[in-house]
Length: 98
Image 1 (tube, rainbow, N blue to C red):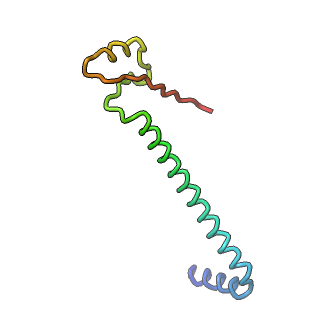
Image 2: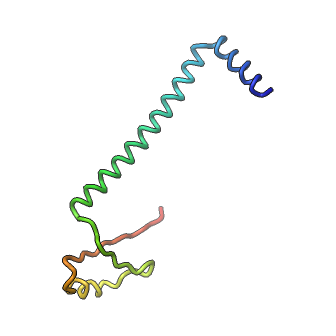
C-alpha cells in the first residue's frame, strides 16, 4: 500500500513538473558526487603527506613510549649510546582540545 502511494506521488511529480523533478534529481546527484570527490581528495592528500613524511624521516623500527605520563627526556642519551641503535630522535605528540 505504501509503495503504491509513493509510486502515484512520484508519477504525479514526474508528469506534472518534469523540469523541477529533473533539476531536483540532478542537484542531489551533484551534491553526492561533490561530497565523494572532496572525501576522496582529503584521503589522497593525507596519504601523500604520510608518504612524504615517511620518505624524509624513514620508518621507525622501535618506539619507546611512556603512555599518558610522558617520556623522561634524560633517557634519550642512554638510548642513543646503545651500540645497536643507529639513530634515536625524539618525537612530540601533543593533543589538544578546541
